[in-house]
Amino acid sequence: MQNDATWHVDLGIKEDGSDTGANAALRLPDSTELKAHGHAKRHPGDPVQNRVGEELAAARALNDLARQLLRKAAHEIEEATHVPAHPHP
Image 1 (tube, rainbow, N blue to C red):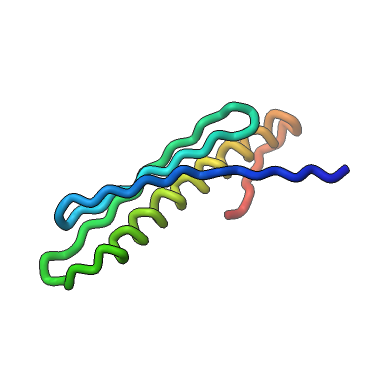
Image 2: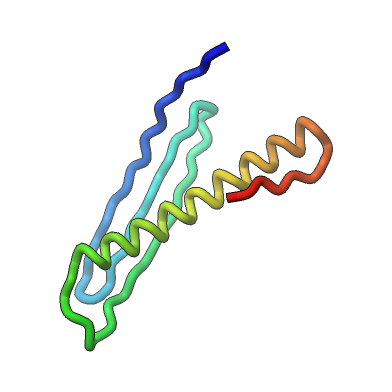
């Protein structure tokens, strides 16, 4: 049986001076909502490169989201098998 799915991640980025924050949100087909945050701070001696701060903050938020999704999957495996699960990232 083939099961195709499309998931959408909402990713918002906000800059405030040398600080950049990113918020990521994912709603799963089972109605679970996962939310994550990432942060980047430019060192005062670094050149202004807004895109780099955005990329770092977004990557950190998405990395947090991925870890949450792995934990959720592990929990569901454990509920079904009654055996500890440790899915690899």
